[in-house]
Image 1 (cartoon, one colour):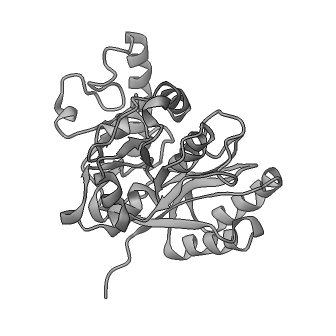
Image 2 (cartoon, one colour):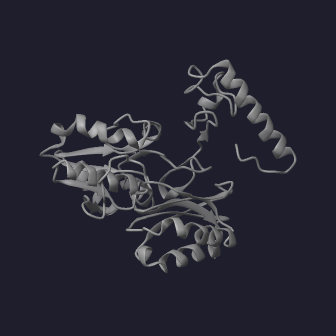
Length: 305
C-alpha cells in the first residue's frame, strides 16, 4: 500500500459572479482553520484563487465546502504533494481581481480561448503556424518552459497586456497558444487577447502542473522545472519537487550552483539581486534573517522565512 504524502497541496481557482465575496471571507477562514490548512486564498467579485496545503481530510473538507457553494459547484482543482509544510500560515484575502491584470472588462466568463488538454498540447505547439506564449513572469520562465515558447520578459502579470499590444500585429492570423502554472493567468490572458480581435487563441487546460502530471517525461516538450509559489520552489515531471532554493531577499529561484556564489547570503542577497541592493537593504535583510534563526532555535516559526 502506497504511503500517503505528509502534505497534500491543492491549487484551485474558479471564475464566477461572486458578489457576496466579502461576507464569505469569515466562513471560509473558519473552515480552513478548523481543517488545519495553511496557504493563501484570494476572494473577489470575479471568483476564488489560491493554493492551500494540509492533511487529506483537511483538503477534502475544504473542497466539499466550496463545491457546496452554488458559485463554485463546478470548481476544479489540482493536487500535488510535499514532504515539508509548504506554507507558514493561512491567509484569506479580499482583492479586486483573483489574478491581477488590471484591465477592466476582461472577463473569462464572457469570452475565453479554446481549452487544450495536456494530451493534445504537443501537437498544437509543434505546429509551425502556432505562436507559443508563456504568460508567466521572467523568473519563472528562466527555470523552465515549453519548447519554442516566447518569453514576454514581464516581472508581473500586469505588464502582460502591454506586451500583447506591442505584438498584436504579429499575433493576428496565427494560432496563439498560451500557458501558465495552473491555468488562471492564461485563462484571463486569452480573454484579453480575444477582445483585441485575435480569433485562434488556445490555452493549456490545467496549466503546466496538469501537463507535468499527465504527460510522460519521455514524450514531454517541457524543459526544466516549473516554479511554484510555495516552499517547494519548483516541481518537475510527476510533480516531483526540484532542487531550487528561494532567495528570501528578491524571491528569485536559485540553482545549487547559484547558492555557492559569493553574492549569495541566505536571506540577504543572491546573484540576481546583489547589485540592486544597498548596504542599508542588506543590513535590514541580515537582521530579519537573524530573527528567523533565533526563532528556529527556539522551536518557533518566523513568518519572514
